[in-house]
Amino acid sequence: MQTHLLALLFAITLAGPMQACPIISVNARSGDTLATIARRYGTTSSAIVAVNRGHALTPLLPGQTISVPACRPVRPRWPSGPIGPRTRVTSR
Image 1 (spheres, rainbow, N blue to C red):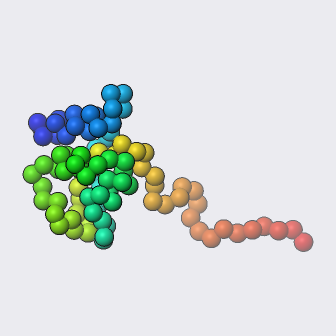
Image 2: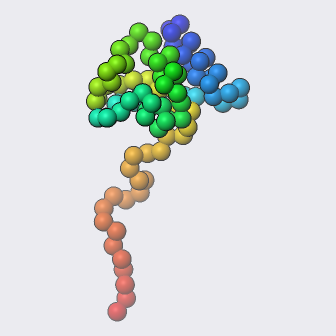
Image 3: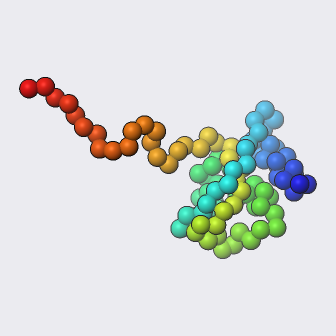
């Protein structure tokens, strides 16, 4: 409990006085590094390490779940709306 509280305070400190960064769970992908994940979520490698105290982050393995303070809004991987080929309706 104390570790999560410290991580949250650290994330708030990085975000600035008026914005708190939510801490989310992220599955590492092949080729990911702490730096690439940090850039993707608008945070720093140091903040990710601080949130994951006590967990081995090196090497970062594909499928490994880590906690990340996401200071930037996360865009969905898939577009919202109907999935499928786009069709064009034309009149004859």
